[in-house]
Length: 207
Image 1: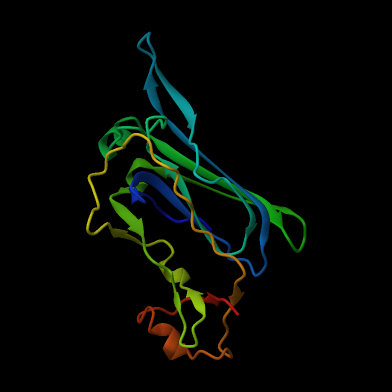
Image 2: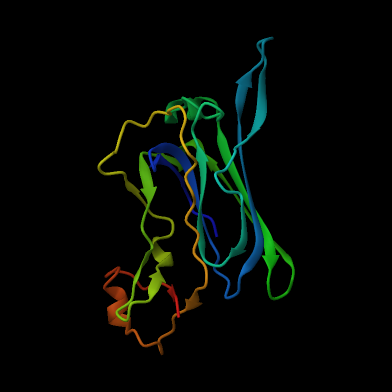
């Protein structure tokens, strides 16, 4: 499962293009690999317009176990094809960001994959993905998939959204060892809804 939008925001002091992925299966995905690319119109030295692909280097592109969620990040540093880009330049060049995820279903040993592309208008600048992880009344972590596609403005902005030189890579946030919460679990429906009062979401939580 991939969200309807990507986001660009400062994370850990570095501007990042970020995607989010979730595993909706009841089992785990092994050997998960992620690839990201940018495709856009570019002018050649001869004045011709060509559609060109650029690989986007990811902070982390592999996870041995994909159990629930992960955030996929690309640094907008001087080595990035998006260095210095803004929303208007992406629109003018008809840019698309393409993300693919492949892995192995740990029950059937079959390859599974997901793919999504984001046009310029689906890349939200100075926004972050909405929080989807909280705690139940008995202290277990839980996730709300109803908020999976939501983004929120970055407030307050820690710094102007400009690339900087020389920064350590940020790490992504994967979650593992999760199980599904059902109505028979210890935590009541009302206590789970205290996290997101208007939600009737599907939840998973640590045992």
